[in-house]
Length: 174
Image (cartoon, rainbow, N blue to C red; front, side):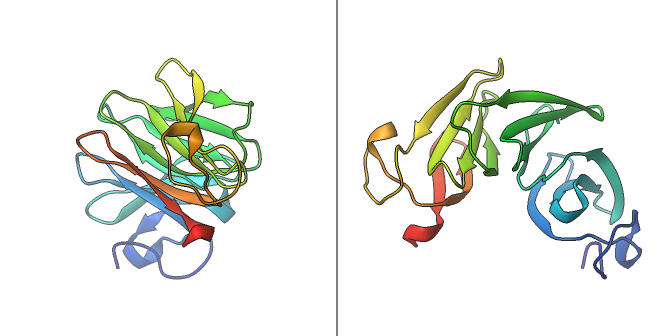
């Protein structure tokens, strides 16, 4: 166990720290792990030595991702927002449109953020400038296809590999 033990909220080292509904994890280049501590409405940072600190307070934070420059991204599940955290300062990168209940996040090498829309049944792409578009999916269902020709059913996770390929965990399509 790197950190945590009992349900609750406490910064600390190893088992002295506690989390409440840790939802997603991301790792930066230095080996720090970031946790979307959903029930505590916080993004937490765990160093390789197991030291847990609170990075930021973000209501209903379910997703978390880190870019190459060390900026941390998270979702506002109930607020339908993608937040960016730089040096502890939280700003809104994107919101509105059909960004509905974003949960899973990933960042590509160019700094584009991909968000799995749990209720919208889409994967959204947000550019570093905050431009929000639908990357994949259209309506609830199951259909392979390019971009909006595809249909997804409750996507929850998304990942991007080094070649820029985007993979989605399409939960209710198994």
